[in-house]
Image (cartoon, rainbow over all chains, first blue to last red; front, side, top):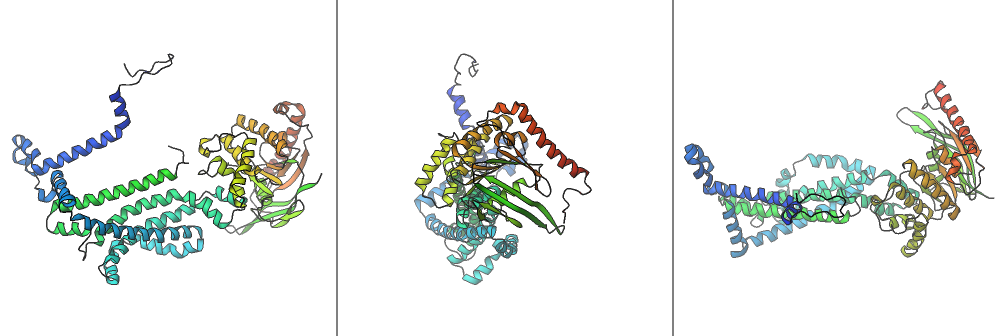
Amino acid sequence: MSTQTVIGEGHVERPPPLVRWYAEHRRAVFGTLVAILFLLFWEGLSRGWWADALRPLIGHAADPLLVPPIFISSPSRIAAEAWRMFVVTREIWSDLRFSAMEYALGLGAAIAVGMPLGLASGWYRRLSYAVGPFLAGFNATPQVALLPLIIIWVGFGLAAKILIIFALAVLPIAISAQSAVRTTDARLLKVAHSFGAGEWHLFRTIILPSAVPFLLAGLRLAVGRAMIGIVVGEIFGSAVGVGAMINRSGSRFETDKVFVGVLVIAAAGMLLAELVHQIERRVEAWRPSV
Amino acid sequence: MAVKLEARDIRLEYYQPRTDTRLVALDGVNLTVMDGEFVSIVGPSGCGKTTFLSVVDGLIAATNGRVMVNGRVVSRPGPDRAVVFQDASLLPWRTVERNVVYGLECLGIADAEAKARARKFIDMVGLSGFEHHYPHELSGGMQQRVNLARALVMDPEVLLMDEPFAALDAQTREGMQEELLRIWLQAKKTVLFITHQIDEAIYLSDRVVVFSGRPGRVKEIIEVGMERPRRLTVKREARFHAIEDRIWGLIEEDLKSRIAGDRPPDTPRD
């Protein structure tokens, strides 16, 4: 066997290149393979490949395997539509810009309010007593149900979108910040007190660094929930935005366009989650690798 | 020799809201430690020795009595005392060097000077070359060395050590004990050392204070009177065993009276 380890002769035989390549990329290989199979299956459904192949065997029982593109579109149609919208007519860019702006403002506001509020209520017991019921109640509310109210308050404009994204994203950020402070290692707090650290120094050197993993985990949750806000917020009275485009295309049975919009949002969400993940890895260089 | 540390009539009561009772953790503890002396406190678990150390450090305020360093009453943590904690309690996101300078940082000492001072003590505890390692990359013994360096760099009048070797395996512990004596001779510090290991207390100390439990009190103070520097082999000598037996006798007596006594150990006296 070529992969056998030779003991006592001072060297180990290297496995052949293909085996090594597979061992290094096993994860990617499996992921890609399943993705390709899924796309093929989908394409086949809309083009009737599977129905045609099985009809000689099971007759009309194979008919449900042909699904008209108006219901499920198909990978090739979606790709063509995406090409058209991004490159040929460039019509999607204005929607993207608008949605990205409301997303950035809404999430930014959620961070700016949620993090300090969460950290402070984790640290000051009285503040946590004061805002506790409010947070719990707000957490139990389906925030999208607030949309009609928000529209009554601020109208159909950009402000409404920012507010609904804010409402969806602020809780995971505030709650994770609060529990981050609460779970600070009591032994480290004792060390800081013993060395005479002042309140601000204690916060900066003990509480904040140990809270970072929680803060980023909360942020990762918030990034996803804020994406929901884009679509929900643009349901009513919005002419621009990726969510508005999805809603409009859906009502016209332009399935391909709907899928392009959904995929754009999904891709943006994954990209942002990965970004947060990369930040997590960088700031946690001190953590033992598991 | 001058008196360095003095604890006079320390009494500590806790109020327990659940049972509406007062628990007496420490009752009339008197202790004097001379300049440059190494004093250990041993006693049955739960006798309040660690609590006493926290009172001396100023983390817990005594109900009665006072603690003095160089004749000055202390009531809160200060740079004249530094603690070597039971679990290394290092900041996991800081390297060895950044952990050692932590206390200096709290005093507002400039970074360059703090690092220069840290280097000396990292060297003293034998961790040169590990300045930029993170705690999780070190063994338990090495983490305790960082813990020790972090306290020594403060140049305290009194070094307070709270069972620093309790979590180490037996062999590492013996090695650390020998190391500690070497560092103590080099740094010339007054040390108050808490442990539940009787042989550790005798081997390290000039005097061993035996606490009795619940409430914590000084039961007896034993002069070790063995020459220094000491080798670990002293632990196998007859005179060492004699002191060990005596301390064991005192602790056993305490445990027995507690078991035989007509009150459960947690019942407060008053």
